[in-house]
Image (cartoon, rainbow, N blue to C red; front, side, top):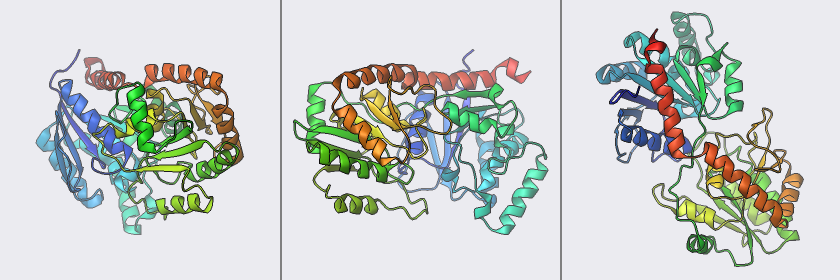
Length: 414
């Protein structure tokens, strides 16, 4: 049964214009849920210039996500009185502070009968050790107040006290399941669809995209798509492209995306520019920089590419929005494997897989695929099937609604 006009309160530390994929994703999902008939409110960080989002009400009033701010969440939730609280969680979105990892417990106490759905966009929780001793003591006291069993150091009681947990990839759910027995019984996997405005397929868009990339007609364009930050394998990609370009001069690397907000790890995009200059690649790499979220520029860049290269340092999984975007544009994909393999990604069938941080293997794969049009065609067909199965907004929203409705069902209440 579809609970028309059920009230949804989304709690997220990130929202546009913050330069992070999770912000773009939750903004689009909030709008889609509103369009589907839910009454949607979004509680998020107090950042300037938060854009109006259709079909929902955005409240950028949280000045922080620390222990002193927990009362603000409770008070706001009591005002809204939602049927569902949807927590959009990954540690960096809340500055790694553990407060939010006890929000499910505290909101259930404040709002009897409310359902808590938590979507974990990546299995990176809080980091209590980063905070002062007094904060760690308070965390211990809060955890004790909400029960001693199944209180995880990084996820608090969030997994335990959420009525449903959504992961974005199988390997992520596998990792989360090590923190709570039988977590799979109340979990779902919903990969992210492409987070960009799609351009019209065809020759005109491809021509425009290649013009934007300054690509010559005879150049094979390898394209990286996504935010730029440590962990995306960009250093390895630039090193690998130096070898590829030396072997096949009529090649170009397009790095499409802007740098993420400062994560405090010392990484700077300027170091990538310097690396490219040292390798003599200034004329062989096209940098898109930031682009408007509500334009089709990103899609045009992808239309102008020939082969997507996504060398994630921790390996690819279905949660990677970059993979969804490449698949949505029928690009053959070279990517990396992980310690917990994503079984939907099959080497030589829908992607070409190399070990992470292995420059020689990555260069060899790029050279191989550039010279093998038959393999390109096979991978295009495979990635198209992958996109049809996992990477559509219609399917993603329908799956999310199914999780909500399952949580609201009388059987769940019983």
